[in-house]
Length: 250
Ligand code: PEP
Image (cartoon, rainbow, N blue to C red; front, side, top):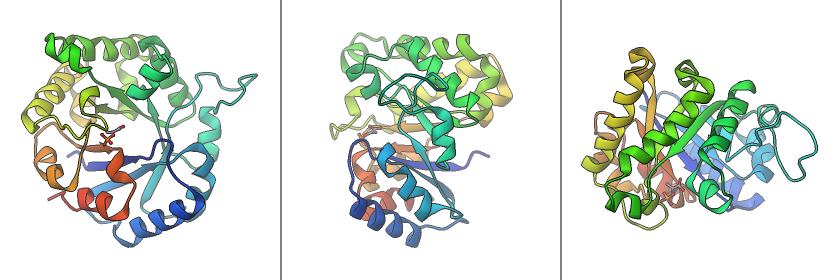
């Protein structure tokens, strides 16, 4: 059985005061024996504070990206081993904002995925199509190319340690959500594709949905057979909204 995972991507939001109250609120409103796992992705600058508040608790945390290199002259960048040193279990790779604003190609994403594995982190590989691509009927081919770049870089076995997040770009931060049926159909496509390479790994892989997940739509999305939780942006920034999603897990 795949346990539901609810993850919050804070993006470039936060302050020391906000981190303290948000994490304390999440600790108070969640528990280790709940039906869902909880993970937060704070900005790098607050990972140390996050570690001191969450250390030893049931809530895990991760970085929002990482540099593909292990170390060296890369001003402003953060390596996988640095994330590991700050207690991270996870790291996002290939979020659509990294792909579109910071020009990360499928091949760059594959290198970051590998760097995450090298640092013993669990990569959360984000894939998804733009509105234009969906309207042209290209959703599956875009997602397939994004997956193939990683599979050809690291092999299917590497997905044992990974999570995939399907995030249609047109639904991120827009208030538009894929219908449960639209999301389920792409999730099933992803699982079937990976299953053709290794059925056990594909069966165990958690595939999260991301794109304007809220307390009001989470239950219906998470009830789909191939949706194993959510990657949440805006609604992960307040205790009330994020816990409403976490509590939607039946
Ligand atoms: C995201 O950026 O990963 C995301 C899903 O954002 P939102 O929930 O705000 O659409």
